[in-house]
Image (cartoon, rainbow, N blue to C red; front, side):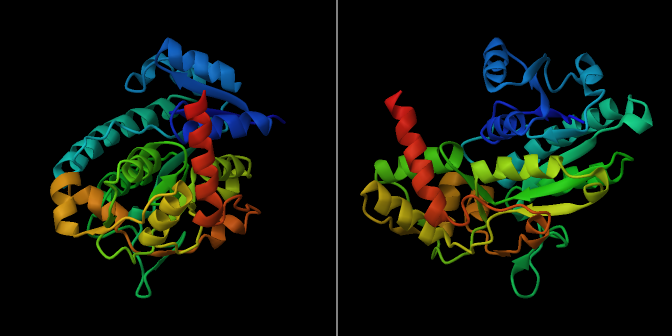
Length: 317
């Protein structure tokens, strides 16, 4: 029987990968569209657009009927300087939306509730004594980076009666867009990119294509393998921040970037932004791989060349 996904944030960086992958895998995909441009883009990707704004769930909640899963990929706009206070404000907005999404799901007959995919980052997870994180890791006790958002959202969902699965992507989802393109690649091109701190931190990474593929793969699993479970969807390569930037610079034909002290970077980017790029953890993705998932880009060595080539293709258009 054909499965149905309802995607929030389907025209975003990760969302387009999810929609494209789900359509090609045979899913019926419904995706929220708040503008004519979003509607046209979703139609081009093969999804059925659902007109509405995320904050007004009452206008589109009927479209949840018949969905097997809801994949929430909404990403609020981020300020240029990511201070803890700024991230806390985003967290409050995110919790308010999640509350409305839960209420929308609960308007359906209980036997028809879709599984809610709550998608966040590896910075939500508390490293153990060996500095490792996996699907069974505890949530952060002290907030760092974007865990100020993700931990609160998960606690909110856990207090509800909605069945959910929790998917943790890399602390950096890289590819032809977002931080990798706008900060790292553009920064290297303009000779202003820097390694933050000593750069030896193991930064949990995932290529955006693998992030999308992992979500589509999980959405195809039986409900009993999803509800109440968590999965870490980062590549497990233990790539350091410096290795990522050095290889990117090398492939671009640029000089390897110098370093910037964390305190100084914090004055520019904000403490939460610095915490995100200097996160140190070995990521164990064995629970995801045990479901039969394989990474197309198992490390930055395979993924960065692809990301740069896709960026070049976009510039040629």
